[in-house]
Length: 208
Image (cartoon, rainbow, N blue to C red; front, side):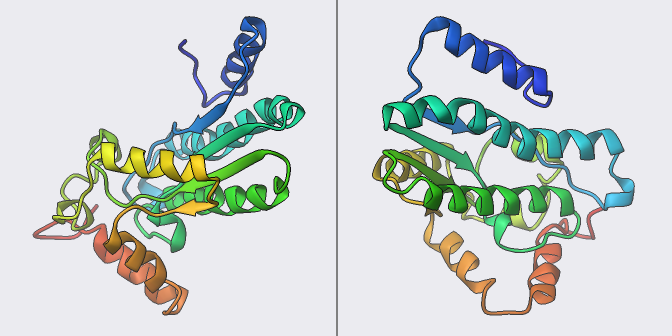
């Protein structure tokens, strides 16, 4: 079905359709989201609000709507798409990075809340992946997305699926991505932010 998840009505519509069909939700995959490259002051306000609505509010809303039935059956899996962006502040994509930090924090907290309930929550934290995300976000020419380590979506999806089935709280596909996630803990957050800013620069000049 088609629904605008950036609106509360869209989330309610999905949940209502599921209830009307009598479908038992075995797994909820919160994958909808988008990013936008640029300084905050240059980012259209409607893009800022829509990004927060889709990346944060819709994910939380759908989880809250569909979780009770899972708990009643004592069975279910939730997979939330976070990002390696969740591990540090991200100048030139400040709102996007912040939304993914929310997803990671929310998912880990929920995984602990759900212990011994029969339901699990997993945060999938991939790095750059070959999807339409780069074109929509305007990050195609950045240093981050011209690396040779950009992963195929099939590999990322498989890693997320396997972690979800095992009930792991968090998974970061790719050895370099895991190293980056760990490395952000070893430096001051302002340093991590400066490094992230460099990754958003384009070859031959700075991102605008």
